[in-house]
Length: 280
Image (cartoon, rainbow, N blue to C red; front, side, top):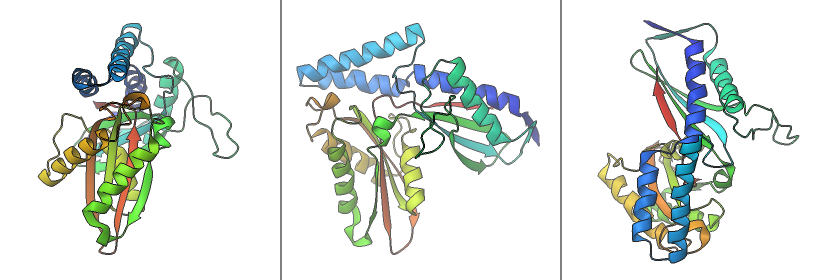
């Protein structure tokens, strides 16, 4: 049994919140650069160049890559051989988010009640998802989620008879309805299966999969490529100005489901698809 003090967790979460909002992943940078080389629209090319410049400036000046520094979504894999001391794990994570957003001068966007809407002042609480795994480590992924793209997500409880074609149609229709609102080029996370809440979680988790990472299931790997091609043929384009770069990637996570259902969820992210991971 390995012991971890909550202070280490708090400090790790703080750093991840700051880093995730400043430094985009190499996969996103690579995808944007590659899109600029193949894009046919001069307007789109120009905007993609500006996005690359924005990323460089954010890193050089150590400032957020986007003004919407998001609501902190935290995925935590806790090894069952870990003992946490000094307090509650959840409290430590919330404290890390509060410190990250205040000390990092990140915009505080969370309201304490969805109707009365008073700002909490430190971007807490976070949305935390736990998974108990083997081992004696704690893996923490912080994925700040802006709501220009979050608002464009959708869930549909498809009938099993609608099958694969129903899934494809729903994903593409969701992207079309989103249009320019999520600041394309986007990354599309798709969750299929499970229950209503499980498939939406899968869609959110899919956004943290590296764009260069091939889906281990060849069936879904091919479906990701097919959907990406179809989405880029919509003509929405970069920031909605047309062209062939509407999406940088599509990632799918699937889970077993009931014989009577085919849940499907789509979670969209803008090109600022932020997520940083650390292992304690």
